[in-house]
Image (cartoon, rainbow, N blue to C red; front, side, top):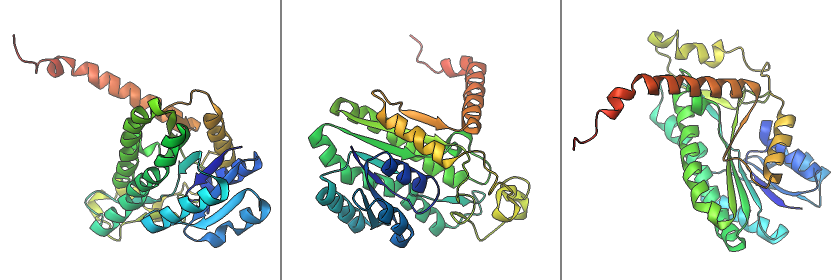
Length: 276
């Protein structure tokens, strides 16, 4: 039995993962900004679930959650940084305050969670950190530049973190999902107040009023949760795990296109060395 700390458990993937972790017999510290959304999970697993309020932009709350987890279960074995939300706008349209709030939640909130659990993990020379990102970090759709940037930032951080922690026995995995049947494209999706007509055929098509994806996503959150459990149970988990056929195919297409462009410009790239 291990102890998991999962952020953003009120809906979607976080909720499905919390339920799966507890159903498999593990302890779970399940968190959400509104802890009332977690009462049913805590009631179903009274001995192994600890439901706590957590806004990942609040460092005092982060410290409190980690301390309560330590008191109740003795420490955290697995951290899942799942809390976050979507934001759609053309780059020019976005409000400065919206951008900063997005990065505070999706990037700096995850960083603060990682820094809060690492001292205990280093002391034990064991642990797993899973950072939930998005295929958006790979494909960068028009209208999702800022959201994609937050997820790309978290992936870049995770790559370095993986190299720093691997010698200490701590495993880091990026989980990069495609579209799953969650509330991400509904309640959890925000957008700029301003819509500039020149972007109607690019970013504008992804605004909530024009989006038809919500409720039709191909991914099953329950199956994603089981896949994440399998990653943690693996003796040699991947540094990056793509979830969903849509994400797998998009990842492969981007990789192929990047390789083609890299080879196309190889001569110019290599021409910049100092002559000897």
